[in-house]
Image 1 (cartoon, rainbow, N blue to C red):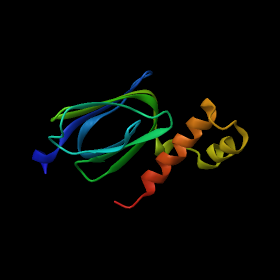
Image 2: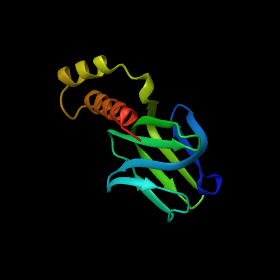
Image 3: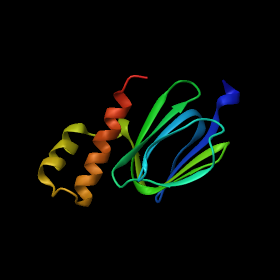
Image 4: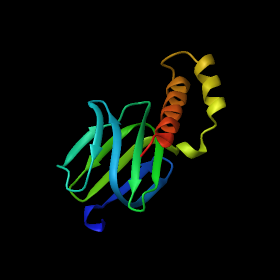
Length: 128
C-alpha cells in the first residue's frame, strides 16, 4: 500500500494541523468535490468557504477537517491544503454548531463556519 500513498499537509493561517501519508483525499472546491489518489494530475483548486477535507490515512484512519476558504495544491506525490482556518471534526460540539445555524444570519461568517463544522462531522461518521 505504501506505493499508493502520498504526502498530505493541511496548513491553516494559525498552524499546520496535519502532516502525514494518505491513500485518498477529498476536498470541496469551488468547481465541486474533488477526490485525489496517488499520481493525480497536478492542479490548483480554490476551496469553498464552508467546506471540509477528508484524509484517508495509510493505516485506514479517516480524518476530517472543517475548512474555511483557501487553496488545494496537488502534485503526483503530494497534496497541500492551505486554508484560511481548519479544525478537526472530532473537536466539534455538534449541539453548539446547530444552535449557531439557528441563530446566525444565513451566509454570515458564523453561519458558514458552523455549516462547515457540521459537514465535517457528517463526513467523519460516513461509512468507509
